Image (cartoon, rainbow over the protein chains, first blue to last red):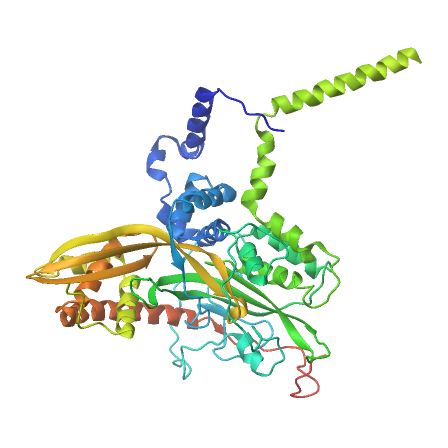
Length: 368
Length: 164
């Protein structure tokens, strides 16, 4: 049991001053440090992937705030995530957006590991794939050569989702059954968590879950702990328009764009007496450039559907309660890190008990 | 009172809202600065920050789910010019109060007798810039289209659809 302590205000204030000093860069660069502080704008522009991670796990899309949080947290991702999570509680919610149409705008990147020739082509976009992973002495920005050969294909705007293409041949399970109500999804930030969850609730939890945790779980499914034979049917990165319907306007209007990463995993087939064998699917969606996160999310999403497909549940990645309860890094960090707060009374009780046990032990030896 | 008898059709308003949201705060400030005979501006609401819950769909077209929230700023203004009153409302992603305020002002202009001018001098100008930027970004992205060819023999059995 934790018993509160008090006092120590001065030491705590000094500790925070010291912390601020450690983050100021003064120790590295001497007196000119004041001019060398990183602006959050620079962080946003040059560390976009990190900013995306903070937005995802902070469950708040705002690159400026995420960059500021990272600076304040001195690069501690989980601290920054916590800052965003607390900040969001100070704002009113105006409502929910119209569901994103991830296929509507031409993406910057769109690849498929399953289909070589697909409408719109394989477009690599800005990617670390195929880089040599050699540390560069100095970072360079090279000019993108303008393609003079041919102007694009006939319909430049269209890059249909690969799963929509496959869906027509019904080799892949459809997104929803034919009779379908399109129900409002549950919201984990408003309702208490109960198991079992619906798939939309699970996806919300995974979207804000820790990237490292989901990566490891996804990896575990590939290594045989709940094998689902995944293929990256499609990975897509780009901006999508956000539509919102304000009550006072009465119909949906565009309110801006956000960058997202989407992953469609296509997995081993399942069939039944009523349905022909079909590829099954896992889905990942994340804010910003977060490909590893979206892929991991898709793997874990599929693994968590084991019950739906009558698969044996034998691995951690298939255990909904285990995965969802431990994916949130704010909760995890809070519980792990609270151990370092003063537990003096608690420990004292253990100490007294142990001394007593020892005394009894010695007493019985003397007697014997 | 003059809440427009000439109601702007939704698709028009969607177009202008898209352009105003995509513009930068600075662009809007400059355009407003150069707008002659500015009407009186009164803020009825905001600019105020809040959140919207961004929803996605499972698999792209399936059930909706809550992806996460996004910051949004909204404002509603009334413009007064020579007895004519018009109101405008804007919602803009992000935490830029000035952006939302200016977008609401332009929305109000678009709801007034100044609509034609606002379309020509604000919306069309911004839209053209945005299209140019978009085309350039798209060209950059298209330069990364790759045509992989498979080195191993492909589908021994011909054009069959069954890989085993």
